[in-house]
Amino acid sequence: DFSHSFCLVCQGPPVWHKNYPVAQGNRQSPIDIIPHQTSHDPGLGPITLNYDQCTSINITNNGHSVVVEFEDPDDRSVILGGPLDNPYRLKQFHFHWGGKGCHGSEHTVSGNSYASELHLVHWNAVKYKTFGEAATAPDGLAVLGIFLETGDDHRWLHMITDALYMVKFKGSVTDFKAFNPKCLLPSSLHYWTYLGSLTTPPLHESVIWIVLKEPIIVSEKQLGKFRMLLFTGEEEDERIRMENNFRPPQPLKGRKVRSSN
Ligand SMILES: COc1ccc(/C(C)=C/C(=O)O)cc1
Ligand SMILES: [Zn+2]
Image 1 (cartoon, protein in one colour):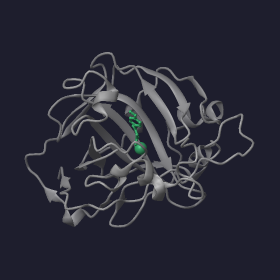
Image 2: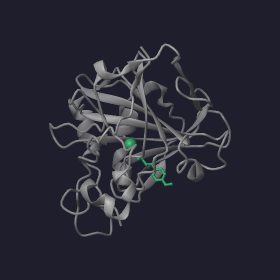
Image 3: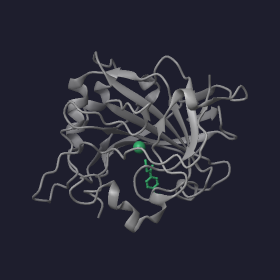
Image 4: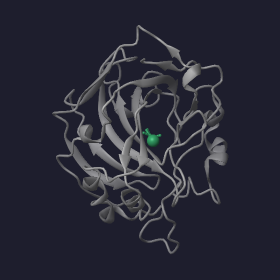
């Protein structure tokens, strides 16, 4: 049971390799991105996010994070272009964050971490029949990573934070319709991209990462609402706050990080 999978006391990232040896693999995520060591690839085009027909379904606390899930029966909401050879279907998005006042992003930039990181998870439905199958394939998933920095209130994030009280406990889920994550994008879609993995068990090495350079700004108050979520279920006596649910940077192992420009 990985409900305490981030809580460092019990079963945090350092012990994941016992159950998931791939944790010590050659394309693990996240990584520290060092901008001047990335290679600018003129052949790397812009990414396009076609989210206008997206259909959000619900918001849930899965014991690792808070996740908004989408209908994915067709190419109604896809990411395409950039390093991707096919359109990838939006499946879900979720967040990683720290404790009060400390940082919680997964990727770091020149050793610096942001307050939080949003992951929009997409899968290659051209080559694979299901999300589960794509999640184990080397080109199966494309995750768009967006850094969150603290400052003013984010004008749309309240739509998510207002729903968090409904999914306080691990395993809770509630309806969450008509939410378009386009409202959570920064103004620039310039990005870094590299081949990596899921950052929570099963840590499959199946992700083409696209990390946006420009963070979005959210307030400390908005971020604080994520920390009222719990890693633990309603039936458990112990109540463990969901915070610091980020995996630290992993060895680059010779990988190249490309820059869109
Ligand atoms: C097939 O099981 C899966 C479990 C988790 C995930 C994700 C999307 C993990 C992560 O966000 O790091 C995918 C598939
Ligand atoms: Zn994630």
